[in-house]
Image 1 (cartoon, rainbow, N blue to C red):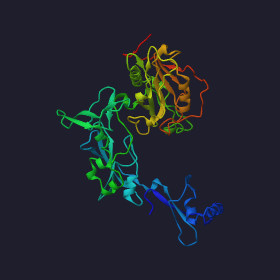
Image 2 (image 1 turned 90 degrees about the vertical axis):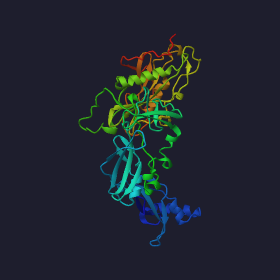
Image 3 (image 1 turned 30 degrees about the horizontal axis):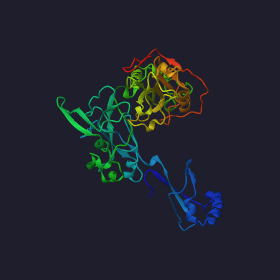
Image 4 (image 1 turned 90 degrees about the horizontal axis):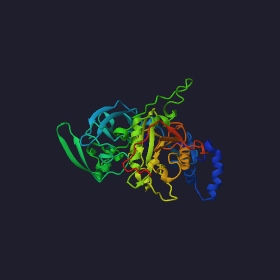
Length: 452
């Protein structure tokens, strides 16, 4: 029997009328190489519904009509069923910041256990590749989802930090690795009672592994065998500008002749002007500016990535790049011939929490803290900045002493996949060399900022 979620497509290769050309082309080569019919079957590609399969999942000779028969298992979501109405089971006992939801799996063909193990779902704004676990009870198979909920015992985090579900504590918004041990203060159901716990990062990092899951005693044997005893989703809820927030801009104007032409994933991303006008974004830019002057004598470029929700392009999320993506330089006497810079490529490879599920990258930002001592006009984007922006396919933002300067494309063209850089075929040919100043906001002088 084919696994759940796949359809068995039986095709004979090469001895039936399905592909005579393939038969006559393959047999001389197969015989010359000393291959037999089964080997020819296992090395013959085929296209099924537009997807190329290099070889069948299995080959067999039924003994009638002659020849080898290849069987392919092709993905088919219609075999996986769908989730019934979600049920809120409350906060997860013994876990901070987790809420449990469950739903019954309906309309399944074949193995219910396999279907549950491979059926994705959405709970609120969290996407799950598969349930946290599957429970088999007398009423059927239920998928259980553990979502992130700050109302479930999460303590308030200090400014510039947010709750990190990966290890169970407050962590820096810029992705700086947390300490090995973190002291947690959280309130239980009795508001007047404070409970203090020391949580080891390594222990919590392993909390989601199947062998360490706190709820493993309630996981059915079927789901445990399927490897479901861990959370599989990518969303991180955080405080202040570490979380997604709404811009001040209005919704995009869609073409009246085709209202869906620029809706959803086909919508354009927010412009630099819209981002620059947000006071929340300005606060994030100010903190990046402050962090650029890490000592009284050195400065470094800091920055990060800006993401938007395809369902509402005005809902954005700012993520800081790790500090080791740039190198400190002397503020007043930079070494000759040494270029300042920050590596904003490969945001997926940066440590720290990912953007909310479904969000896509729509802009980058970084600081130019060096000032006149570096030579030239430090307020302007460099040639490398321009080239990167046009190649990546998203606008760039420079935070400098004069304020905010935008460069590159006006917007990301479409908010569909991929989550990272959409990349562009348009090359930089000197257009917009000085960039464009947006708004009147300027960063407040940082504590370690030196001026000649």
